[in-house]
Image 1 (cartoon, protein in one colour):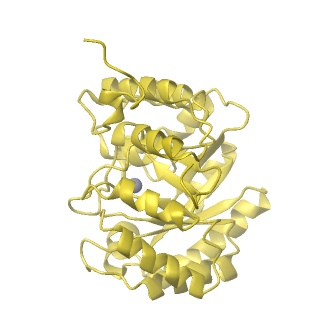
Image 2 (cartoon, protein in one colour):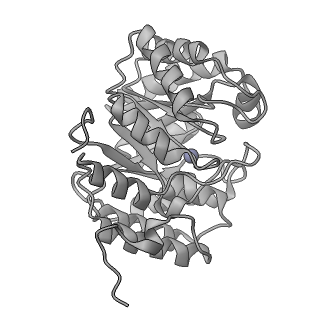
Length: 307
Ligand code: ZN
């Protein structure tokens, strides 16, 4: 095992939501089939749905049907993103295991994505967290554009840390995750954010990180963050994804590639890579094109090619 890494790392699958929301609409039964296939790979958490208004993000229409149609595997947490009170009520009615609320640290991106200021988003997160906690459902706040913004450029790590502290203290969220919406993170930028979080006494072994592979730094960012003690990362099957409100944002890091690298480093994910590769193939069938995941094509390094 590589020195200094966490013994186990949680990889959270975000393809069925973050990935598919950028595709032309995939039928509900196919979304269910993808989630069901992912559910038996050993993944501990799957972002399964988004309870947004269907006009805002048409590919996420039918999220309640998706949640009701999947076969829930014990031990897997099925998570859903919510943008407002209505979405939170709908998600709770579907018995999601975790609610995700999102805000951007970038003022411009937050207005484009959520039509409000970051401070108003904090107020909203307070309200939505209270609502979810009444149903004993945990809430994670996702702070997006945490490593830079396509509109505003660099984002001050200190500003990210201040908002992180604020949502923890004022909303009492159960978890924090930091999103690299436009794929601007590099190991240096990750290092600066982790330093800033430690300065406001946030335990970085408890946070999650979400990288996009826009500039091909996703895996380097994950390895660097693991060496700093971060043990939770989002990834999308096949490398699906992007962000409709962030120009040029490409796919998430691919789950196959991340699991392959993390397992090889000696940290355990609990995920069966062969089954995961099968899910990547299914994802390619659903979207009808080749996806960027590399291990999906090559297989793991231990697989010798007989030719
Ligand atoms: Zn993403």
